[in-house]
Image (tube, rainbow, N blue to C red; front, side, top):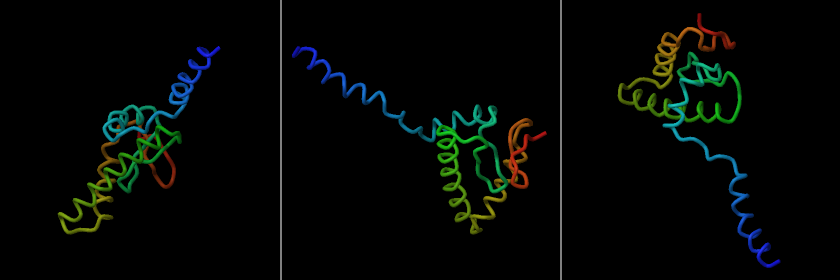
Length: 117
């Protein structure tokens, strides 16, 4: 009986650890997942220079947040370096992102997600 109780005491923490959600992804993992997320129609590009979630789930939200945080930091750096407004950098980046988006991937136009022709 003591052996069973001891085994249960050892297994409970392990089972608890397995039941916890998977740790959030890092930027490198988000960048690696971006192409597939775009191809699956989960994320799309916006004219403001940032990604948007076409379909919401935890993984998609992580990808969007991590990449947008990195983009925001880079836009701020570029704006400061070139003595221009961050909004101007965002607009230029958004225009390029929309132009570079592959056919069949989502872009946000007039508040609606549409597949780029």
